[in-house]
Length: 70
Image 1 (cartoon, rainbow, N blue to C red):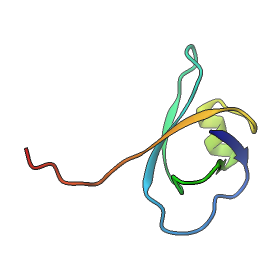
Image 2 (cartoon, one colour; image 1 turned 45 degrees about the horizontal axis):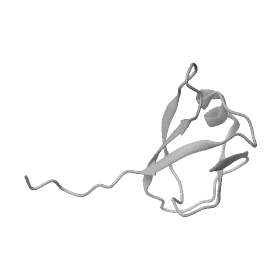
Image 3 (cartoon, helix red, strand yellow; image 1 turned 120 degrees about the horizontal axis):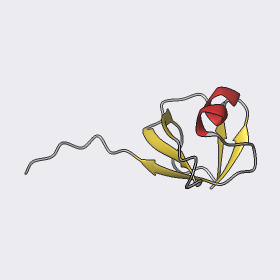
Image 4 (spheres, rainbow, N blue to C red; image 1 turned 135 degrees about the vertical axis):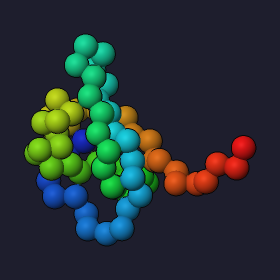
């Protein structure tokens, strides 16, 4: 998924784990975003924390708040 700089869309979005694709400089952060979006919009501070720039590729996974019943 490609990342862009800007103001994320307002709304109640689920928590997602977002990470860069850099092996040597791996970074990840937790953000509340639309997991169905085609291009992820992050703030400048979030991009800086991930060591990313607009246009870079990132990985994202939605975190499910389901209760485990094992």
